[in-house]
Image (cartoon, rainbow, N blue to C red; front, side, top):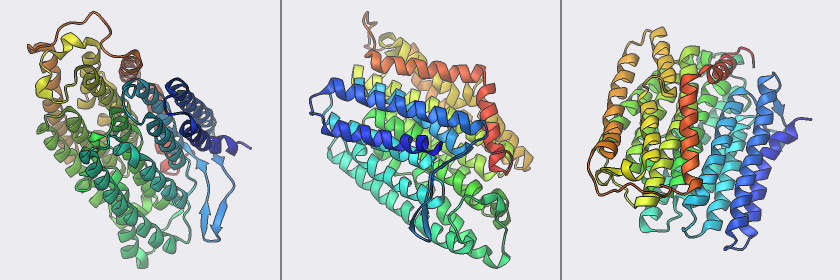
Length: 489
């Protein structure tokens, strides 16, 4: 009876959110403590589940039938375990960071309520036992994150929220349509990808259904041209931006693409349908154009937003290769990008909190005022470029090898070009902060509240550690990739 632990990983954040909603609005101490405690307990439960999953066990709940044809179930396999562990651990850091960042913001009770509800939805996505359950939690995540996107309450925030909802509804419609067609052909919503057999009579129908699912999930994964909601959402508080870009929303879209490709359809069926050509094209355009757009942004958070779009293209590219090496690279980048990008956004939030500066052109000499924050930003930038010995190098190396296995010699060219563009929009920020003269003076006090500075430094240190000692992460990801291709689960 191991499945109750999996259900608790969803129920506990919901319970914490309800309790926070009932606390007096001015009770900051108890609210902050409860929020952090809830995320720590959730991460601990997930860690316990993950340990057993990688030991060869799977967590499966009893199936709940809405109707005989609509089953709901939770099940944690190795792909879900990787996503759940990454998200739940980083959520702890984001919550601690939020207690400092939101200290002087309005509507803190509402913020933390939906912050924890978003965690519950993300854990539901990771532990979904079939595509129907995944779809329901996926839409719950949209509803839970919408109040976070519009938290500022300004007209700009309202416009960003409307854009987010409109794009999300389009994506939801595509996913639903793809699910209806696919389940009618397959006869179920189950993750039975390795057992699917191509029926030539159904090729056209299944191709359309798969592409509907791919581009439907691609909305949250910010696949171009479905990306405009993501830069607009930068009006949200920085911890929300970090979760949108590194942990929850965009990674749930990526997770949906991997689930569709390998768990629902199966690599063999996708290869037979020849739809991965569309995946490769979309991923390549996203990698390249995301970097080009990032070059044009002066606002720091918007530059990071377009960087996210480009980096998500790497992960999709890994799935589209349909070989184990490419998938290993994609999954490695899912983890590495999460660590690096949350570090960058946390650093951006600290800069805004301490200096009030939002534009890169205003940050000349900033490293004199915030040396530790900008050092972490610089190291994370190196990781995003993929320079040795950061953790970003290994994932891109596997992606290049995966492309060469498919005789796709354009993949190394694409990734090298993207790395040059990454350097072109990240390094000037660091150079300006460290080597340009500005109005910032060295401070004798802390450069940011401890609850904000410590998560930045710890996450940066963890990213560097995984670059210098990548074997544990690589071993885990290799097992997950093997399972996706029908190996040991």
